[in-house]
Image (cartoon, rainbow, N blue to C red; front, side, top):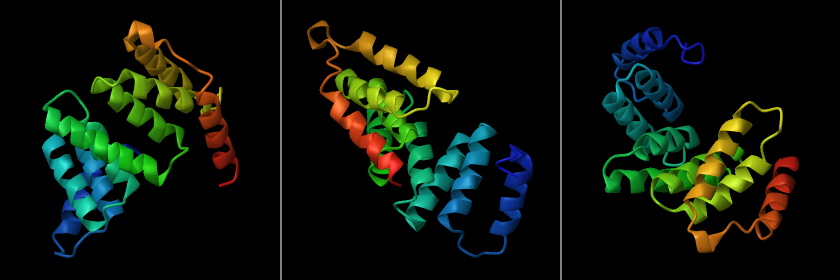
Length: 173
């Protein structure tokens, strides 16, 4: 139901499942959190993502979803926790363009444009030109480029090795 974006129906099913009193696995809790978040019930969603991470601290979708939620403008401590969660997701999937983009975006949100630029360059390079998300990633890369201090003009050459490694890693998975 969550993948079909039938979020109200999904939340109702999850609530009935919760009435059984059994502990739910991380994927169920994460999907419940996703449905709640799509309905604008962010505090409840955050609780489900936290519960998913208590169940499985390495559950990448929960790390990613909660990390993105917390990296939004808010308290500095929450934003830093969001970055930490997104970095953990990236460590689990190092060449994944989605994870590279998310951490790069979070770095940009927390005033780290140089680090953001490096990751976003890799995210764009790892994204197929036909992928509709490429334009979004290119836009975020341009935001990072614009935020770079003038003396730190983007040096693309050192990143070529990282792009090649990401490409090789993706080809061999």
